[in-house]
Length: 95
Image (tube, rainbow, N blue to C red; front, side, top):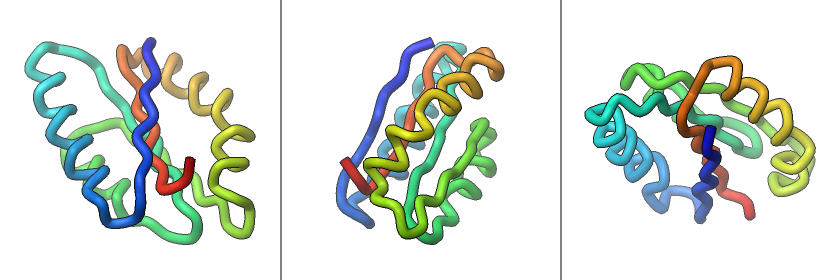
């Protein structure tokens, strides 16, 4: 399994770009999943679910999103392997 992290400012189009990439990868029968990291709230997981993408979300709350990412990346990778994904994308407004 490969891991790719997409990060950028809020509302910069990360989710839209990821959904387009996943659409192209699905045509090649590549199994893709997403873990969405955010601070307090996100509904982006619903967009991924609607597109048929395995998804999990993690909310950092009062913890710095970067530290939350580092603290949880091993569990994220384990989830991706359990799902038998070829590619796991993490999305974060941090980093």
